Length: 129
Image 1 (cartoon, helix red, strand yellow):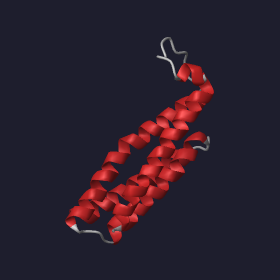
Image 2: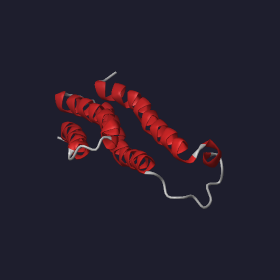
Image 3: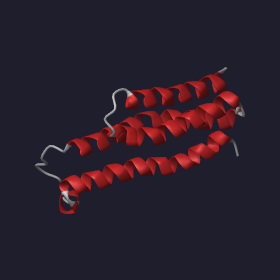
Image 4: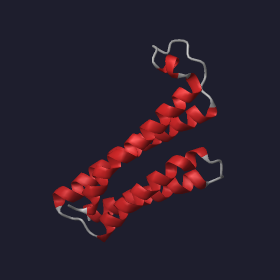
């Protein structure tokens, strides 16, 4: 099994982490009773809930690209240094991104996001050319 495919499988845990953090933070903000309701007339969320929702949304925007590139690498048999390092960089950066979204250090979150994008670009160039 290639590194890319292995990281694709392990990325399910990463997705569960993003979903879990968002779910836990939401329940801490609104309470379990409200979370189990229809959520009609919901008050505005606190900043932590907003950050958790944004982090999850951002992950879900890039995750399909990683899936496509990992599968394309596997199916094409083009796993090489570019695709392998790209997958590792994306995977590590996405783990770092989650706590970074909650830490208020200027440019930290954006820098980590840029690093994860570089990982995807490495994968793309490795599989496409």
